[in-house]
Length: 102
Image 1 (tube, rainbow, N blue to C red):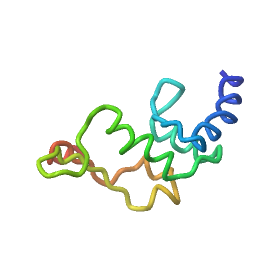
Image 2 (cartoon, helix red, strand yellow):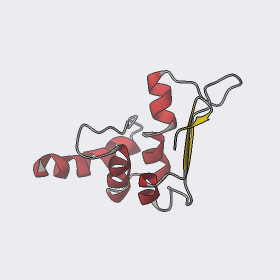
Image 3 (cartoon, rainbow, N blue to C red):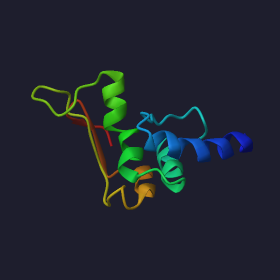
């Protein structure tokens, strides 16, 4: 597992710089927030890392973006995750289809 992370720590930032779509998941270890933090720690631009967990992931999965009539799925934090990705572990509110679930 350690050698896998070592290899990923070198290749993921290169892939991101070349425009490869990053998609955060839980298949490597931990939560999506852990993966975003890891990518940023490896040197991936914070906006690119967040896109792989939020808008890029929604696009890849075919979910609506910000359009009239789209599902009102929103998460908020008390700080900017681009500056402090650890806040991803502590959402203030989560709305799914317009209803607060957290």
